[in-house]
Length: 125
Image (cartoon, rainbow, N blue to C red; front, side, top):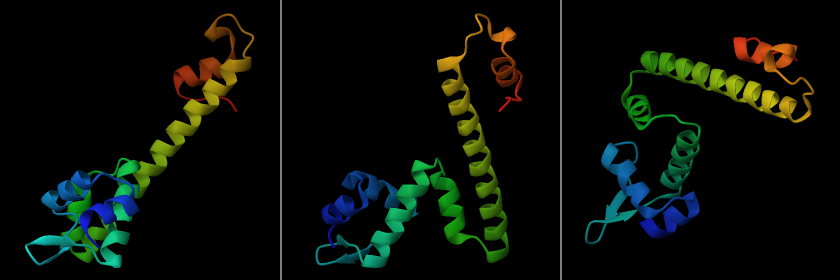
């Protein structure tokens, strides 16, 4: 599959696939006049990269994961998953706070236990 078709399937512009290749996290085959040719497996890999990038997983981390020894890869994956879980908790807490403020009747944040709890880092649920 040529780069334009692969990019469409993945849901990114073609220049993004080129960038990922330049960074070493994606390696499509080459055919003919050095044109990129993506196999179904490489398209799936690009989809995974895209989804991980949407979750703010960095290209340097993805590159390290490609070349890491299995024991190092496990530690990298564990730390990346821990960080994503923490970011998800932070986002969930922020969403809950914002939803709470839609109905909060306290005129001052410090008068509301939920608002105050969010401000000090321990939101009440």
